[in-house]
Length: 427
Image (cartoon, rainbow, N blue to C red):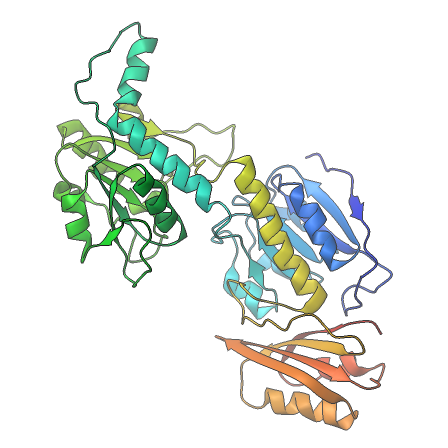
């Protein structure tokens, strides 16, 4: 596997920490062609040395590449498990330059004091645009006409071809993608309905319905925009498909396990559904060299795309900047805002003349008292302090004023319950 030459970006604002002295750069490993816009954003952390692997890696290859790295950036195919985390004692944080984080053992990372960040909103526009385009293509019968013309047929008839204006779009999941889609669809004169298990602010001309059944029964097109959870997996099964209007369409640009593909095939075969657009699948190839197989490929009224809902240059650039900024802020000022597995602390920029203690600890009674006893014993003034917990993990951040002893880190590491401690700010 080819390894790109390290790329070094300089910044004079490097901060001293337990893991990276001010004289050394932060070592960053990026895999799977993370967008190059991440490089400049990572430089907000100080001097960085970036090594890139063009593809996903695992096992010994990944462990060797990760040796000595402080930050790891991956996309969806690289797997980060307990064994890998144990082999990387210098690792401070993991950035998933994508939406999902299923490829990381989040609990194991948290137990080792490693926050995991992602970029959940950066591809919102791209997915919404593809969904709206798919609705237009399906209602015009474009998939069948494309296949016919390649076979030499000239299907110029308007039969079965409709404008989207005035049609009913049912959005299941009214989060960032669903709500933005409703705005775009409203602009085309589409009547938008949505169902979400939580109350949401309405956008455009969208109207909330009271149940999934109601949404399925009234919509000309149903589109899915929910995460994969125990509640949502295979929620579009034979019963749900039977509730959809005859001649309606299904779009799934969310997660592959939301739809029972066999039941969808049956609904398409019977003609109950007039077509579908599917971008995600229960089983997807691990790489370009692996074949794709699905019963849905036999239908000429189905749009199949290879999980590209967020695959635009604009989205990848935004994801690169978003995830990289979260990593940079964590190593530079200890911020864990928007971490998916970790207590969230937003401590802000460190004021001149102060040092910041960032301490990951077991979430058990008494730790904060022990921490403050150390500060009191060394005569430090606590100018600001933050504490948050999540599950078994606690995260305390304190800004100190005054002269600090050289062995402060050692004292804090020896405290009962300390998992990891860093001292930030110029020494």
